[in-house]
Image 1: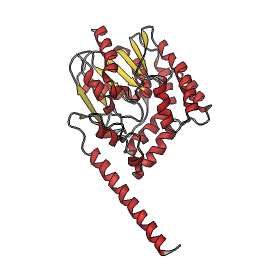
Image 2 (image 1 turned 180 degrees about the horizontal axis):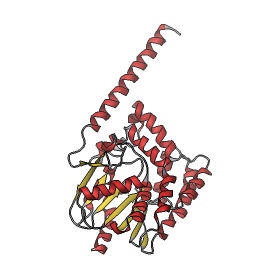
Image 3 (image 1 turned 90 degrees about the horizontal axis):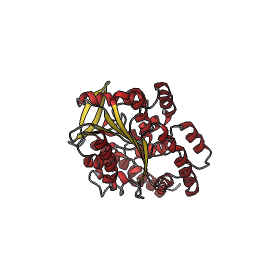
Image 4 (image 1 turned 60 degrees about the vertical axis):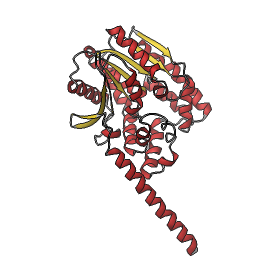
Length: 327
């Protein structure tokens, strides 16, 4: 190996180390500067970041999807009327990243209780849960039936999660969320995800878009997501031991199948397999409708990838409808 080549390789290595250092410094500066419209609470020794907006009952608490951030729901939060609305980052995410994620539904239910006490909420709440977070809302409803007035699930995981998970395992090249999170955790820790991120341009047109995009450059978010994915079966065991779902109104919102397919393809799944997964998901996730006789399903007509950010009024309308019904 010639000296010129060694010098070039050395230069590339130095540049890479500098780039990683700069990337980590940027993310650390973001982590140290939470937006002023949010605040912190202590829950069982965990310091959690949350945002509260509006006044009125029933209060609405929104649970973000695994591997995502509550900031994506701020636009919906702003559109909900005549109610206090709270979003929060679970342990391990964003400005709650200094608290260790456990992935247990019982721990998330305890955190919701802490928020209710801290905000002095007196009446039963409405829980809005996105994706995997439907498990946490399910557990809360079963263990605290007197403290929940209604629920809205957005693309919930099937109640029969084992069947869903086994069906995905039969799809040869389906990239499971845990696999995707591990890859992104490595890339974000090395600083490379900043360059390769599919979110870099996706969020820039939104208010708080830069804050959201930087969230995805934090390896702690992916570490928390991995823990949550690993603990799903344990969460389902907690739900089975908790009892039946209460007789409350439940609205289930489903995005278009194409939206889910595009997300899976972006994560490395082939189009053919993603379409098979989409068909399986739509069939199995219908079991959420049997949780309560007061459930109803809504097909969201928009094919937008981030409908809760691009058309927040469309999501908020269904939450506002439930608030009116409960008044």
